[in-house]
Image 1 (cartoon, rainbow, N blue to C red):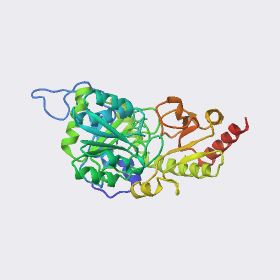
Image 2: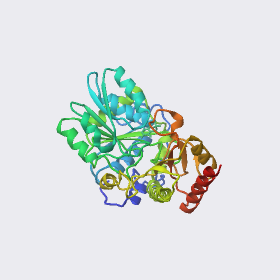
Image 3: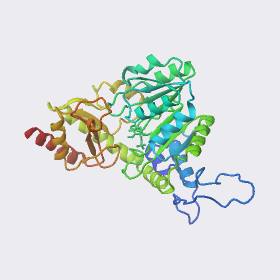
Image 4: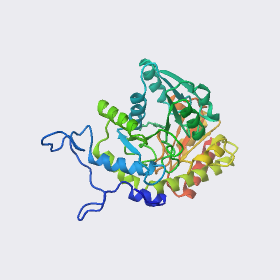
Length: 378
Ligand code: PLP
């Protein structure tokens, strides 16, 4: 794609093949374990674990959205889940004896990855996202892993600054872009080597598909990630890949609405005396705002805050009518959860991670304010 389109146009056209008479605009899912393959086994489609035309369309679509500018050559590899995509980068790049820097406050399954990496003889160092503290432990690392905004604390680091320091000593940089989506920030544009994400969240946005992807500029890095997918077989089903591609058409609409709703919710919560520790990177005055505004195009759909104690948080969640008590985030239907119920995150008992959906803002705010009052009254 070499068009200078706006985000809405990019979303609805992403990855579509050239129009063909009598063909569907977005070709349907190709269900194939193998393909007709007479003679030499070459060409794009040989075996179903290696390649699939439905992935190809989706990979082109995501690459168009992640590309630093229209027409720049980047390559996307889709995976069965976000964790498969994270693993695809970590385990294709790191060898025994290497050093990797992870965030200490990122997605809680990073702790599982850490155990696995250490079992393979890889040294894992961690530091918090905020204040670019990962810089302090970067020396000699082969890979720096960034998650910004971090989940669930919503701290932000300066990606350009970290990339500059990393590249000056030959360290590769991967950014987990799950929370932001490519319409929130484009890590490759900020200089990262890998943009990695769970598509399970905002990218597909309906809470019905697990998916992941890795996008990189360097063809050699992309080939290594693709090879890893083939080795472990962490491939998406064609139906999931097709559903994801279909969902991308509304990504811009969803992100716009959800981010606007998130800002409105954060602004309303900021007025409440029963809400502490409110975080939303798009809220002027948030500790993340200045850095976020310098690198993000939209600030995401997740707001976090703390109610006085566990019981109050549970009563709040129970009193909500429009907001499901569920984990995950980024979907069109608002969800919220008391994050402390999982263990693993360093958060207070009353900490709520709120994923803002695409409801009418008046309805959503009324529901949240009513639930806060109900939780306070008991
Ligand atoms: N990265 C982040 C920031 C996440 O929040 C998650 C899941 O919650 C993942 C990665 C893993 O994604 P998946 O659940 O699709 O494997």
